[in-house]
Length: 114
Image (cartoon, rainbow, N blue to C red; front, side, top):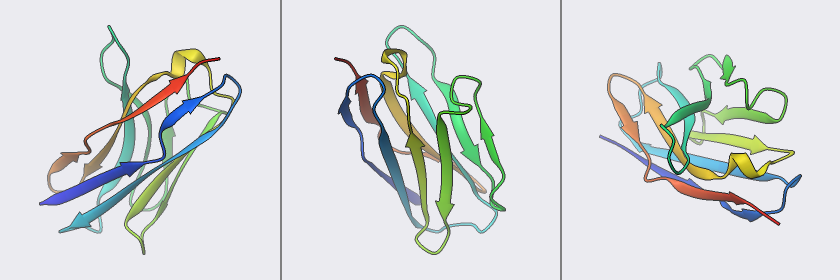
């Protein structure tokens, strides 16, 4: 089992920044990739960004140039730095761990509004 705890969400004005964190605990696989997905009202859950075990990032087109994903393997934590936030970034953001099995965090709300 792997447990994921997300933090860092909240309300921010358009153009603002937030940093999401996701700490993994339990039986962590060294080959695990981690990522962030989001679910907006009326939409399907979509990939925002992911990062491989050897720190290769992958971004959705909507995140490219504004968001940065990183990981600290010593802390078993993945981060998502989100800059230049837009109202359309409003969603519940989920951390995803993909090792020998996939695990999801409970989700954290990000609201971009003036």
